[in-house]
Image (cartoon, rainbow, N blue to C red; front, side, top):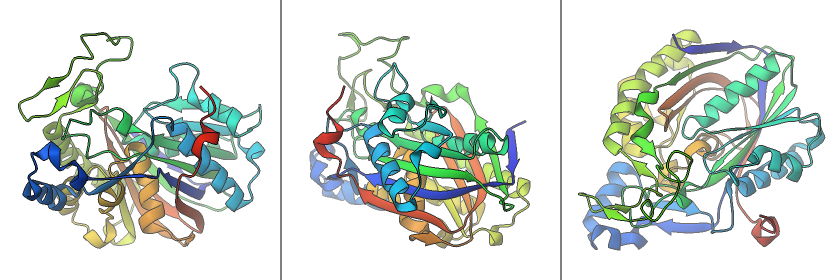
Length: 364
């Protein structure tokens, strides 16, 4: 049995997505591929990799999310003191201790009556964060929830690992979820399979495997990728198999649970893992590609938990989106996946470049 939830009186009021300013292109990393421009062109066509945007060494996920929240608050003329709960979804926190949500609570000048907590999830994290927000509002505990989702995975990969380095971009997002007096049906189904925990893993640096001289040693694998145990590892074949085997059935399940048909759906918004995965899933679920944005990976890179809000802001909404019925599907590290069917109706959305600079980094 999966975790299924239906909600009626919750709405998304705004989404702001923030892209860091440092631009990197796979063409500039031709040395990773032995100078073979034809191989790069094949990767571009098949996987969709091209350009990504990353942070500098001082900027963190919390900086991007704080910036997004302030833009959204100002644009919506929303008082931050009215936030009842702050959820920070990320796998790249500022600190082990304290929670980054508490740090952000102070930076955003939220009320002492506001709950704040972190969620350590990646590719499925935005859907899980929305689910938690809906739960707290529908239960009557909150009227306004601020969901911050962001990652700086570029800091976790070895620049000499061509299986990972050209893939990941960084981003942060802020979403305002509110109580609605109107009936706003939203359906969620969540799944996990911890047997695949090591399909995407950063082995060293936690308490099970502390960093050491041994974990810092770089090793070249059979495919000429260089990484240490302190770098992110991705088993690409495992993730591809997981995605094409689990996500099509998850889409069918959420359509059935929400009593929707494919023709009722305006957009299917996947976590932007890579173009090849998205197109293979699309063929299995028999949705036209016109309803499935797949170019975000090409424009920004794989942005982990921020890829869904970035896709919404970039591809689905202008400043106002009216009555868009969407499927959201996040899947990946964990293994964890979640789907939702909900409406985006007259929401504010924007996507902007980060201009925080050093004033946001006078800390730590």
